[in-house]
Length: 408
Image 1 (spheres, helix red, strand yellow):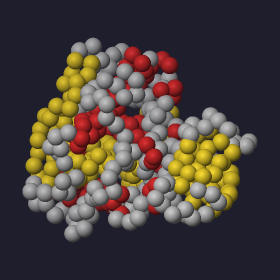
Image 2 (cartoon, rainbow, N blue to C red; image 1 turned 135 degrees about the horizontal axis):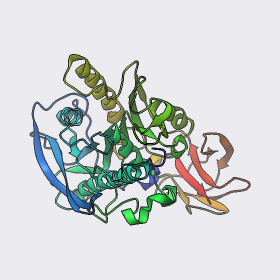
Image 3 (cartoon, helix red, strand yellow; image 1 turned 90 degrees about the horizontal axis):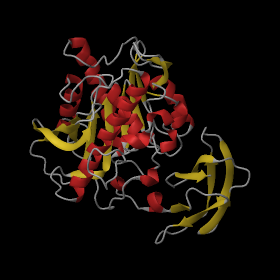
Image 4 (cartoon, rainbow, N blue to C red; image 1 turned 180 degrees about the vertical axis):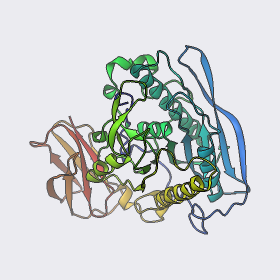
């Protein structure tokens, strides 16, 4: 699946803009304790339509779960995708349904989506195309909720706090959605343009498919290097004895030609090196999706999965430097960097209305290596490229939200 796994690199600055007063209330146990005893489910909600592998239109539906009686106007959202190797599975699968219901009791809105599966001929090329189609459908689901937030507000979603989540194949999709940003990364044999490009044509055009973070349950990527500075955070959970999707570096494909992938254990050192938060929980000795099922053992794994992901998500809703922190806007907006991408230099500009304070800045390359340290002395100051090679860099400084810098 090396060729099937394609990522979307979304810099923090690319997330949808939200008003500072539209905060998420994490007090009184919200998003940590199951404060809602009942949930309301809306089943088979249509969120789009797309052409399947046979060339026929397929209606895309999802099940939406909300806490019964909740009066909060803007709530975080989890969009879950089921597993099945892009050949099977459904939005009603036990593991994703259980997770959706548990998080709804905490106060989240959750959705379990169906997406296009199956492919012919049954070969490596076409499973890669199936993965692209599935990720396009997940993007359409995210856009559905953003459109709702901008219009009818039926689901009462905070558009700045949408998370992509998935189990097995669904985790591949969530990772792809969050980190692929260039059509050029797609192998030419996939004929991406014929599939509709990265965003696809599954519905709700004109709205962003960006997410605030990723929940990766037993998933993998084709290359760890696709995780770059400034990307959104992700949480991973994976069994060390997973025989379907390797925990570390390994191959997948079953009856298809083996493809090299990098599981959760192999993604962590890369993400750590480039400064992307990525807590990992290792199921020692466990196989594939050990949290799926109703046995006592599976339910114990489900309890662990629920709690670990919960504890990853909640701080994001109120962490320093986000609109939920109820703190001055300086950390979020104090520094602007343009143009992007740049050829010879970028300019640092202090945001209007924010008192400028000189400070030391550091520039890190894509491996996390410090390549330059300098003082930001003036409200508007150039940073020359010098001998830096083309690529992505991360600019950081005390009291500032990190900014991505791209040199062509």
